[in-house]
Amino acid sequence: MNNISVNQESVRVTAGSTYIIIDGLYISDIKKSVKAFERDVSIEEIQPIVFPYNELALGEFVADVELFDVSRIKKITYDKSLRAKKNVVSTDTGLLLFVNKPVFWDFIESFDYDTLVDSDESLINESFWQSLIKGFNITDFALIIPTISGSCTSSGGGGIYEIS
Image (cartoon, rainbow, N blue to C red):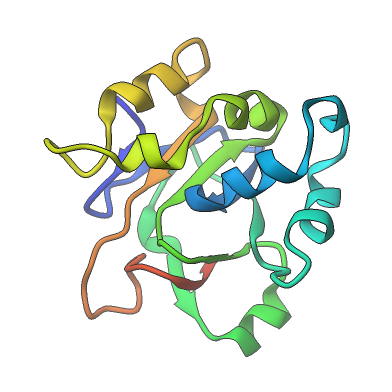
């Protein structure tokens, strides 16, 4: 199991663990702004440094189940996002990564958005994804690939999303 959701399939997480939720595209911004020697910066401190104009670029979610139903990710308005705060994330691409907080820095060190989405055979470069998650627990990462539909309950591209 690759822990990838393409068509709203559930993904495995560890109940009680805190996950950083981020658009894969934004990881390169973090890598450019936070140098390797500054990696002792807390994830909470990244938001104003790297994303001063987007307070929703990084979301946090504490898993409450072992099998996360992706349909819990709902598109919401900006006004509603201001009231929700923690379980909210904005995205440009709709491609969301759930990264277990303790392994966040190790993961982003090797992550490259362009390489991930560069594939002629499938939606993502699956061999690159496999190389990224190798050596970690399967529940440390989940990849949610947006489904394109008219429903506002699917992760269909950019916008603001809340995890209920």
